[in-house]
Length: 270
Image (cartoon, rainbow, N blue to C red):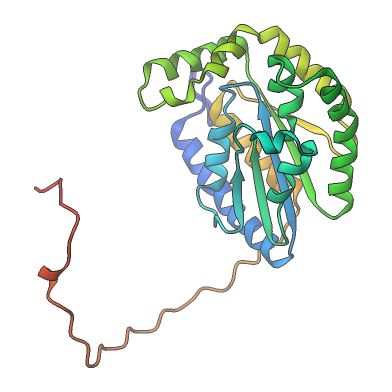
């Protein structure tokens, strides 16, 4: 089997190609960021999918080179007792973007149609009310001028199991393997049914779901970023190059003795 283009002989993407393409796309994301700021756009990107589907990795690649004051990530924890008494969408509304911002939701209001439904954390009435209300809620956001993009990361049962095993044996990833992950591993079919039902109500013309094949992480990263860039037409507003003038000479400044400062110990002395 011969190597061809950007693929190895085994069909996997070459690391060198992935890194070069990622760098190119991240530069385009910086241009998009500047366009969002200049045009006062409000952008919401939702990332949903099974546990270990790779949502966090994609979000990291998107935000790696961006200004956190313009592009921020929202990953809400378990609702408080007070939040449980509120209108369901209320805890998400304060995190929506203002003009010139892009917000990436690492899981979102769709928790109700996924984990809450499957694990029994909401009542049947709450669940069905969500499915009725959600399309109207999203329609209101879009009609207000907000750009809303929704991604579902699809991973096979075999690939999810490989990633769970990797988390189990890697101390740096073990924090990613929660009790909820273990339960979801046992309830593959229940989550599949919940996803199908959610799509049947919320995959609308005005706010469609875009499914990302996430078995190959590198391809998922690149495909998602390219799709975002395609979904928000933008102009290159990169300012002209800046020429730095010569530094002015210090006049009348005497630096305090360096011994008076407390430095972090150099643990890596030659």
